[in-house]
Image (cartoon, rainbow, N blue to C red; front, top):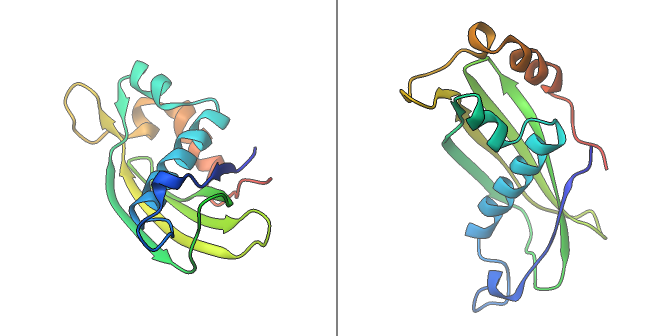
Length: 142
Protein backbone atom coordinates (compact mmCIF):
# COMPACT_ATOMS: atom_id res chain seq x y z
CA UNK A 1 0.00 0.00 0.00
CA UNK A 2 1.13 3.51 -0.71
CA UNK A 3 0.92 6.66 1.37
CA UNK A 4 -1.12 9.61 0.14
CA UNK A 5 0.87 12.28 -1.72
CA UNK A 6 -0.40 15.84 -1.89
CA UNK A 7 1.09 18.82 -3.72
CA UNK A 8 0.41 22.01 -1.77
CA UNK A 9 -1.83 24.34 -3.75
CA UNK A 10 -1.68 28.14 -3.66
CA UNK A 11 -5.25 28.42 -2.36
CA UNK A 12 -4.27 26.34 0.69
CA UNK A 13 -1.87 29.04 1.89
CA UNK A 14 -2.65 32.08 4.00
CA UNK A 15 -1.40 35.66 4.07
CA UNK A 16 1.88 34.42 5.61
CA UNK A 17 2.35 32.15 2.56
CA UNK A 18 2.18 28.98 4.64
CA UNK A 19 -0.47 26.29 4.59
CA UNK A 20 -3.47 27.26 6.70
CA UNK A 21 -3.85 24.88 9.64
CA UNK A 22 -7.33 23.71 8.58
CA UNK A 23 -5.92 22.09 5.45
CA UNK A 24 -4.00 19.48 7.43
CA UNK A 25 -7.35 18.13 8.64
CA UNK A 26 -8.50 17.89 5.01
CA UNK A 27 -5.29 16.01 4.17
CA UNK A 28 -6.05 13.59 7.01
CA UNK A 29 -9.38 12.88 5.33
CA UNK A 30 -7.78 12.42 1.91
CA UNK A 31 -5.30 9.93 3.37
CA UNK A 32 -8.03 8.12 5.34
CA UNK A 33 -10.17 7.77 2.22
CA UNK A 34 -7.15 6.51 0.29
CA UNK A 35 -6.30 4.03 3.07
CA UNK A 36 -9.83 2.59 2.96
CA UNK A 37 -9.64 2.26 -0.84
CA UNK A 38 -6.24 0.54 -0.57
CA UNK A 39 -7.75 -2.15 1.66
CA UNK A 40 -10.59 -2.60 -0.84
CA UNK A 41 -13.20 -1.23 1.50
CA UNK A 42 -13.87 2.37 0.54
CA UNK A 43 -16.56 4.56 2.01
CA UNK A 44 -18.89 3.77 -0.89
CA UNK A 45 -18.65 0.05 -0.10
CA UNK A 46 -19.20 0.68 3.61
CA UNK A 47 -22.35 2.64 2.89
CA UNK A 48 -23.60 -0.09 0.52
CA UNK A 49 -23.33 -2.47 3.48
CA UNK A 50 -25.26 -0.05 5.72
CA UNK A 51 -22.25 1.31 7.63
CA UNK A 52 -21.29 4.94 8.22
CA UNK A 53 -18.09 6.01 9.97
CA UNK A 54 -18.32 9.58 11.30
CA UNK A 55 -15.44 11.49 12.83
CA UNK A 56 -15.92 11.83 16.60
CA UNK A 57 -12.78 13.85 17.30
CA UNK A 58 -9.73 15.19 15.53
CA UNK A 59 -6.41 16.26 16.99
CA UNK A 60 -3.41 17.80 15.18
CA UNK A 61 0.04 18.87 16.34
CA UNK A 62 1.78 21.25 13.96
CA UNK A 63 5.55 20.71 13.86
CA UNK A 64 6.79 22.79 10.90
CA UNK A 65 5.33 24.81 8.05
CA UNK A 66 4.34 23.64 4.59
CA UNK A 67 4.47 26.05 1.67
CA UNK A 68 3.03 26.37 -1.81
CA UNK A 69 4.56 23.96 -4.33
CA UNK A 70 5.89 21.45 -1.82
CA UNK A 71 4.74 17.85 -1.91
CA UNK A 72 3.81 16.22 1.37
CA UNK A 73 3.35 12.56 2.13
CA UNK A 74 0.50 11.70 4.47
CA UNK A 75 1.10 8.44 6.31
CA UNK A 76 -2.00 6.96 7.89
CA UNK A 77 -2.51 3.80 9.89
CA UNK A 78 -5.12 2.29 12.16
CA UNK A 79 -3.82 2.82 15.68
CA UNK A 80 -6.72 1.41 17.68
CA UNK A 81 -9.69 -0.71 16.72
CA UNK A 82 -12.37 -2.23 18.94
CA UNK A 83 -14.98 -3.27 16.39
CA UNK A 84 -17.18 -0.32 17.35
CA UNK A 85 -14.62 2.50 17.44
CA UNK A 86 -11.38 3.20 15.62
CA UNK A 87 -8.48 5.66 15.88
CA UNK A 88 -6.40 6.50 12.82
CA UNK A 89 -2.98 8.12 13.33
CA UNK A 90 -1.37 10.42 10.77
CA UNK A 91 2.06 11.78 10.06
CA UNK A 92 2.53 14.42 7.38
CA UNK A 93 6.11 14.79 6.15
CA UNK A 94 7.84 16.75 3.42
CA UNK A 95 8.32 14.25 0.60
CA UNK A 96 11.87 15.39 -0.15
CA UNK A 97 13.34 16.32 3.23
CA UNK A 98 11.30 13.94 5.44
CA UNK A 99 10.77 16.85 7.85
CA UNK A 100 7.64 16.25 9.91
CA UNK A 101 5.01 18.90 9.23
CA UNK A 102 2.13 17.61 11.34
CA UNK A 103 1.03 14.59 13.36
CA UNK A 104 -2.46 13.78 14.51
CA UNK A 105 -5.34 11.41 15.02
CA UNK A 106 -8.98 11.04 14.17
CA UNK A 107 -11.45 9.04 16.24
CA UNK A 108 -14.35 7.28 14.55
CA UNK A 109 -17.37 5.13 15.35
CA UNK A 110 -19.04 2.53 13.17
CA UNK A 111 -22.76 3.26 12.96
CA UNK A 112 -25.77 1.63 11.34
CA UNK A 113 -26.66 3.81 8.33
CA UNK A 114 -30.40 3.58 9.00
CA UNK A 115 -30.51 4.14 12.76
CA UNK A 116 -27.20 5.94 13.43
CA UNK A 117 -26.73 3.66 16.41
CA UNK A 118 -23.35 2.08 17.21
CA UNK A 119 -22.62 -1.03 15.19
CA UNK A 120 -20.41 -3.92 16.27
CA UNK A 121 -18.43 -5.14 13.27
CA UNK A 122 -17.53 -8.26 15.23
CA UNK A 123 -21.20 -9.24 15.46
CA UNK A 124 -22.63 -7.86 12.22
CA UNK A 125 -19.67 -7.85 9.77
CA UNK A 126 -17.10 -10.42 10.95
CA UNK A 127 -15.07 -10.22 7.73
CA UNK A 128 -14.63 -6.46 8.21
CA UNK A 129 -13.80 -6.92 11.86
CA UNK A 130 -11.02 -9.33 10.89
CA UNK A 131 -9.75 -7.01 8.14
CA UNK A 132 -9.51 -3.95 10.41
CA UNK A 133 -7.99 -6.04 13.19
CA UNK A 134 -5.23 -7.23 10.82
CA UNK A 135 -4.46 -3.64 9.82
CA UNK A 136 -4.25 -2.28 13.35
CA UNK A 137 -0.74 -0.90 13.96
CA UNK A 138 0.38 -1.86 10.45
CA UNK A 139 1.84 1.29 8.95
CA UNK A 140 1.36 1.97 5.29
CA UNK A 141 4.60 1.57 3.37
CA UNK A 142 5.72 3.71 0.48
